[in-house]
Length: 410
Image (cartoon, rainbow, N blue to C red; front, top):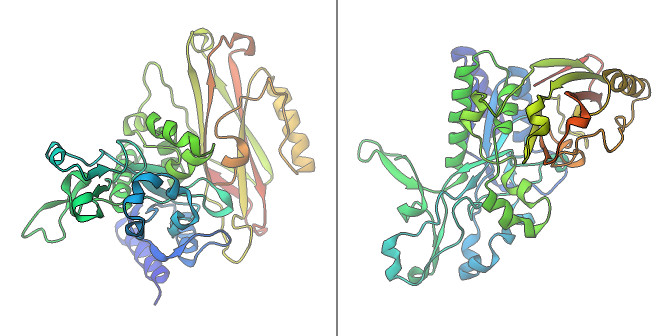
């Protein structure tokens, strides 16, 4: 019996007998580094389970195993080696309908005691990608990982000429349970396997707040609440416009932001279903204060959906979706443009540049995946665009069979 078969049987049984809805999988196949092309059997199985059972599956990117071959050069080559093909995701982290989690360093891993040893050198700083994490893109070039959290770091130990993590040097690791709790309850470790359950815990808190929420809602809101640490974005910017997304995804989820609104941050959400080759339009109220206040303001949109998948097809997703945020346009104009699109299909309708809120990351990159989160930023007076924006969401049939007539989303 194969690992995907064991995984499917286990998840189905836990869901049926105990109602489990969140599954942490800190596992990966070190022999299956994603190099493009079709999805692996394990990833395909998890995607089908996530859709069929409406469960949230959270998977680690996997760890680097060959860093020792770099020797002391790891200090010079970090973080560029994280973006090389050998550092791509391990199966099943490429799965489209799951949350894939990478790791950030919670510290540089060096203590005051290390001052006496000039050869003990940190590889990275706090909030930077962990030296052992892995990078995207995923299937179809989609943004992966989806999120990151703190899983420890590694330091170069000159006296032993080796790269050490939390297992050998506690200050480089995060605290976790020991495998032999009778003799010792906790120990320090480093790895994406320890960042992943932190996200599972955040998802569990969110599910407690919204007990009937679909898995798409959990994915969408966690991404909406997340931000990439500014120091990581700044450090990675020199490696290309997509480097931050391919190592940090949407960033670190903030559970307080995921579960609440406050005086200066309002969250709207909808759990909905849409017909294939159809569109929906949501009205977004824009308060006067938001229109005219000096300084930076943001509108962030997150869309999650769980399409049918098929490993044997080059186009892995049977259904695709996308969104646009429109301003300075009438409701009638938005509907008219999309009604024409419904008849002709093809690419979604284009709006004049002044009417489309340009969000980052752009539509070409974000629409490759099933979790699409982007931010529109404004710094000037926006009152000329009125007090109502429109969020247009559309759905396109790719190869989904005729029996599939609609797609659920959040």
